[in-house]
Length: 178
Image 1 (cartoon, rainbow, N blue to C red):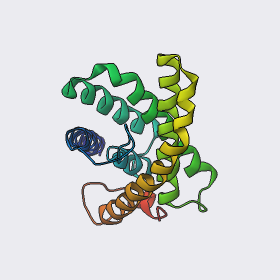
Image 2 (image 1 turned 90 degrees about the horizontal axis):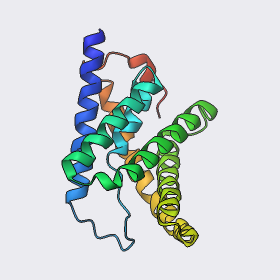
Image 3 (image 1 turned 60 degrees about the vertical axis):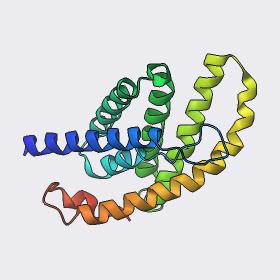
Image 4 (image 1 turned 30 degrees about the vertical axis):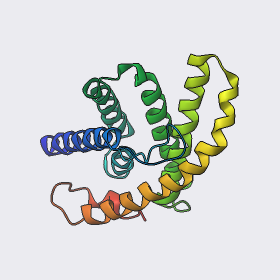
């Protein structure tokens, strides 16, 4: 069982890495600079709903962010990625715990997208030493609501069909994801 769990985690890392690299390579016509859909966050959400511990999700995030930075050749963005991914994971997990049956997976995803953007803006303020970057938060938050709902819908769909696979056996944990 432990080997199957590790294989499942490795598959989540690979999928997250592929989605991250794919998103970097495709030019999405957002008017807002720096805005992305956040496809790799899909794997974080799936991990939060299927893995047994929160630390396993954090391990997947760290491996994905580091390998993504290495493969994309952009290690300078590592601190932005780590801050955004980890803070959104913690916020989504907090929403899961605090609002157990009151917040759907779409709501959890939207919270994660907003917190991800906020964390990256805080890092930018620190790195660039410019407080005026805060003015960008309302715009990024608006985009985060839309992209968070999109990613949440995909995650809901994936989790629904994941219950029918033999890859992951903990179906009891998936029963209340909607």
